[in-house]
Amino acid sequence: EVFQEYGESECQFFNGSERVRFVDRYIHNRELYTHFDSDVGLYVADTPLGVPQAEYFNSREDVLERARAAVDTFCRHNYRGVTPFTVERK
Image (cartoon, rainbow, N blue to C red; front, side, top):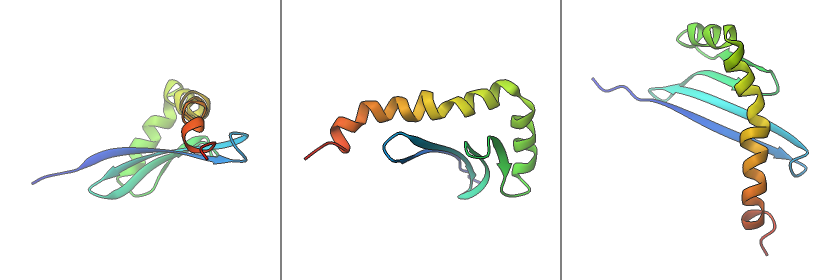
């Protein structure tokens, strides 16, 4: 049997980088089972498979701090780097 496990991170920008939303998704065999949403500030289980994962991540303050900080350390950081090539391109 073959199992597929992967993660996907997404940054959503509103009004430039004034408001930013970070979403981190965990997917098993093409089914989303856990995700982090910076608007919520916690990991959320999307299926029963994701319950233990979300509970574990939410019990770890270091994991939560890293995920919450991603709005700045990942999203805004990369926005500044790619903006000249994507948004401001004419």
